[in-house]
Length: 342
Ligand SMILES: O=c1ccn([C@@H]2O[C@H](COP(=O)(O)OP(=O)(O)O)[C@@H](O)[C@H]2O)c(=O)[nH]1
Image 1 (cartoon, rainbow, N blue to C red):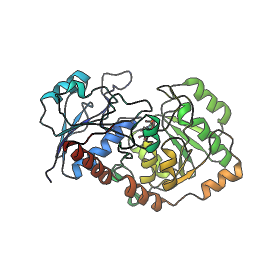
Image 2: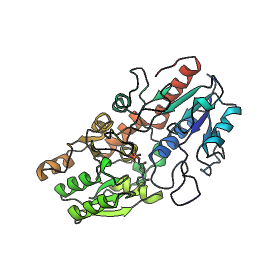
Image 3: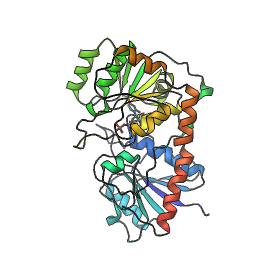
């Protein structure tokens, strides 16, 4: 079958306090941008052509990849209106949509939020939990978040394992940073807390209650991020069923950090919130909500986690960038053949 020309539309956001666009991959915190980066790798490896929009200034220079200098929604839609592409794959969360494109454009969107999608027709979800939560139909495809091992540390890099536990994400109530600190405290392990803390009161509560356990290091990127993901004893993804950033009770949609940890050889301890109940058991263990962890049980959980090689293999088998890109390409071809779903 002939290769496809795919317009991948990133969610266009600027680096806080700057004119620069958040790139693909992102300079720091940024789940959706990592999803787009890893998927792009898979599509390129399969021989498709990728036009990246919504992330001007992203690294270019790879065969098959064009970084289009379009960041503002109007610029993106203007480019798409006259573009020679087979399919538009949107990750912008409704910033652009089929209404702004010529009738008949093959339009598919991956939903990354917990709200109802702005463009439900042709929408895909990262987990069954997210699809149910957001009102997606039973026939809407569920495709988990992709991960390209080449973007993370491999076994050959021989990063030594250390004793600390890692939280890497937005330091916010819905992501369970406080509960991660409680779990680490119960285990008697240090918790490295990486990520932006935009809710100062919440951050203060963590340090007040678990100051001796927690080492806050702020937002990380680059080599340091990769080393942390690979050297941690385990990554904690303790999302809670509390009000999330878009209102409504948080239902973890896809959890980029889970596949990133696993492909780096690090098992995951997570709650059963949203997608976590579907993905954590393959690479770690599910624990309960809240901060009430019995030390013996918490230590037993840590001691029983799967080995590095095992979680790496599981990540590649389940979420490898080529496997996931193939699943998307299957949906692109269905769409081009006239399929539709809601
Ligand atoms: O200091 C940080 C904290 C987080 N991240 C990345 O930000 C993303 C967070 O995405 P996730 O889906 O886990 O959480 P959410 O998008 O819900 O905040 C992941 O790729 C992390 O590796 C990062 O690069 N630096």
